Image (cartoon, rainbow over all chains, first blue to last red; front, side, top):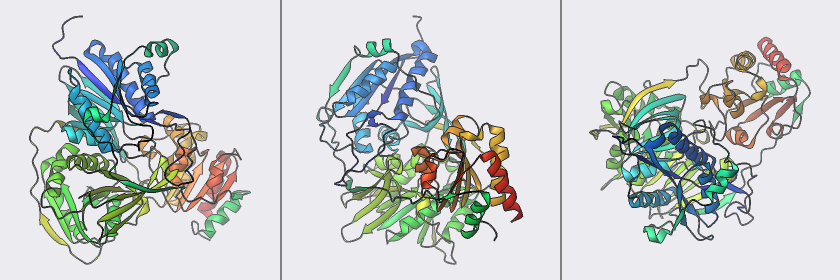
Length: 266
Length: 326
């Protein structure tokens, strides 16, 4: 490998195990949460983050030294990490919490990630993660981590270009009513939007290879972080049912209905 | 309680999302302070507009060339300063807009407090110092009630604008107070450019009527040719399903659904949209839903107040013509 003037870049990709996007959500009878005894998979936005990290390496080749995943949660999170390893990440960290533990809040997750970053001897230059998880829909973790570290942030990314020499990221962001382009000095936190890329399916050989990749296990205690939620969830309920299903036979009847509701001149 | 409401504006006009955030903040039952940031040439006009808004006690305004495009790295230090130490504020409130949701969590983390996103209801108990929020989770397929206790000195939350009416302008005049900007030297992020999708139609997020199209529209040309005349006769905004956006029929900014815009207009006409869970999450709070689809079993009909099973390429032009002559 030819010597490069730029230091090699290390990418960290936090991923969350969430109820699969295709599962029909059911609130539990106690109204304390939803039925989680269903299929789980990697949060789709985090899958886009893993894909982007792998694509950056494909594009920048040897300039990317490592792609490391991190996930926080119960033992089954290791399956989620294996999925990301099969997509092309090199190694993973699993911050394991008891199965009975409540889901940590974004601030707790951000604090744990800060500790993980501090522990990386080679440093971290780019953190890529989903703009939100499709379970709690909070959309806060990336920004909180950027705040804790005082790093640049690029939320809702739909295009990412890294200039290795200049240590800069140029990011196209989706904003209300259009898009915005910004340039961030590394280190940077990037959160992914839907159209950044289309994640690949892992090939069977890569799935086999991923089984041999290392997953380091840590506990919140070892990191010195408290993941206890600070907000209290009092109740989780079903959304109000919408009464629909009314049909009309033809356009004239539809116009009658629109008139009744005041949307067209009578 | 005393809420600090982050007011956003574009071209000298306060965003309607911010006006809804003000209404939500008002329901805390305490004092209201609005914050207006911007470039030196624009802040004054916006502050004077903000001054007249219902329920506002004070408007803080701060001008700096750095605030022309409010990057989180630049705005967060000012908010942090306003909310630190002997701050009178108990709540930090904004719209759930792309800009504010980039800024507020950053500020919350700096203040070591959690944040609550996209709330649809808020209630404050002054005696216990507890604030209770209602917010959708799982793309609106469940509704969560969360409490921030008095242990959390500043409650940070963003507001779903469709759940609160916009604060109206009154004859009142809140006090104006100038705040020194917090200049950030050597900012790590630079704004390059903003590209907004131009349209003469109402903006999707605030429109009272929306005509939305799905994959069945076939291509970008037929999407436009079929839907735009109907939208025009109704004075409606145009929306699209994720499938239609992914297929390139419509711009990203028009996407309605879990990952796009959440809308709740008076009238939502879904044309050639099957009604995936993700799409329903973005529009099922609309007052009246009309669905036009060839497939009688499409899930969209389950939420429709008026469903028409028909070929959209015949039904939509007929509807447009008959509405025109009505």
